[in-house]
Length: 72
Image (tube, rainbow, N blue to C red; front, side, top):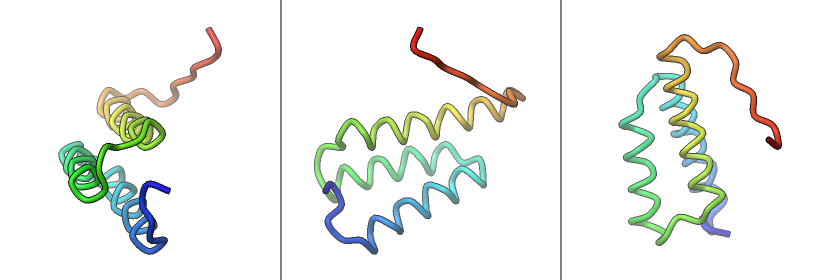
């Protein structure tokens, strides 16, 4: 619901995927800022997606192959 147009939503996901493939944390930050500028306050699910993207990049940079989280 946050991004009303399907094509725009797919584009945002594709650009986030490209930022992850290129290990570009600045691109993730820029994409979050762009989303807020274009569509307003970023809802928690999308904030979580950006946070997970940054975590994945940090893990990769540190050589972490796997990260697990459970209910505790």
